[in-house]
Amino acid sequence: MTLNCTYAPDNIFAKILSGAIPSVKVYEDDRVLSFMDAFPQANGHTLVIPKVSACNLFDVSSEDLQNLIHHTQRIATALRDGLEPDGIRIAQFNGESAGQTVFHLHFHIIPVYNGNQVRAHAAGQMADLNELRGFADKIRAKL
Ligand code: AMP
Image 1: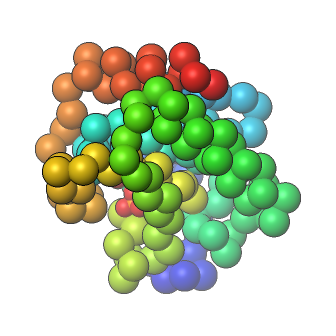
Image 2: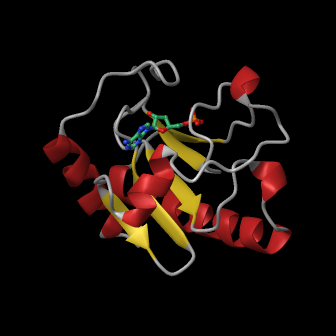
């Protein structure tokens, strides 16, 4: 996979979008989906993806990207108010060399809590589903 990637329709986020595999949803409309990261780097780690088939930042129209970042800000604001972390990281990786592991464009919203180290990217343990649902409920309540 290079920065000039070709979208693979069987990637894991495409399967989440089609409903072939489950996710803990935070927000959905006709253009974006937000759900809890199943291997979170911190409690409340949330992802936001567009519904267009774009594998990275260079594979999406600026209009779709603007809509995606708009919703990322909205969801990050709800996460800020619902989970009250001390800081929030917004991350987005392009290419395997940069750490990208799923080749469907997405933004990470990673809450940072004083005294708790953010876990390594793409190295975490699968989270407990009920715990993820609890975080999603708190974020959704502030949307
Ligand atoms: P990246 O490495 O930037 O492509 O991020 C992909 C993210 O997707 C990682 O943070 C993974 O923990 C997360 N992830 C992988 N599989 C799933 C899944 N089935 N449901 C939710 N998140 C996932």
